[in-house]
Length: 333
Image (cartoon, rainbow, N blue to C red; front, side, top):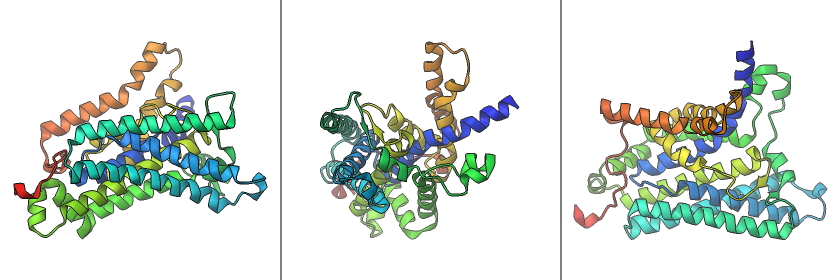
């Protein structure tokens, strides 16, 4: 019974830990399917998070009383702010790597550094404006709308706690992953996108616009990843922004892409596993600080094992796109 009780307590927390990772991984899968390797996902998640925070902060401070707060606007303003911020990051990445053909690895790492710095800079400015005693900005009223559970969650006991006790962004992450999986595997557009990722020269010769495909996939993927930052702040962190608060979740999202073998539907279950591994040390009594840090390594260790297994089997459907990380120059055909 103790084990069952522990699992019931662990599962919802694993889901909440995994949702930001799922958003980042789904966005990166869409990006990588076009042949773009975007290591700027951690930075994009930061920008998405701080953009939503800025939108919510401006809206809350425009009200003379919180009783005037409109639920629709309280949700839509941060959501649209996140879309705008992460979309601009995606456009910047595409301009550098697709149009100018700058090295994708260097660009991605630079964008991660830029995104984290961007988030920390504007986060510090907001903290200075509210004159907080602690280095954080609290948007509790806006957060309540993001954390609202399904109305029947409390009346369905354990089932409700396990499956219905999350905010709408958690369910949106799962729906988006399923839709991306369907798009990639069941539609003509998905087939064209995968063709661009495998062999852009052949796709170009077949009349598929390589540049358009890369721009669309990367920008849409960036917006999806940006929602991971918004979810973390508004739902997981209860509307509290603190600099450097994201930890390594952006890098876990990139690792999850490999673990899920570039399949968004598998990423749903893998994200919950990663979320559980990320916090499992909290449920193991008597761990030293060193042991806790070892437990934090488990998602990466599991990813390395999966990568070795996938590489050894050499099954085409379990490999990443053949042109991943390579810039395409039409005159090279």
